[in-house]
Image (cartoon, rainbow, N blue to C red; front, side, top):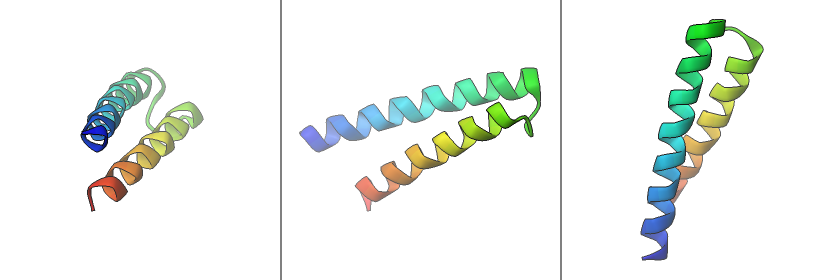
Length: 54
């Protein structure tokens, strides 16, 4: 149960981070340092999720 809640929480954080990154990329461009940092944060969330489900 706790694990499922954690997975759902991670999925929500992933979705919110994706939306945030796309908004920033649209405004600043995909190579802007702020967007790159956001992308790296998204990568970390995705890696954490992948480790949880594997």
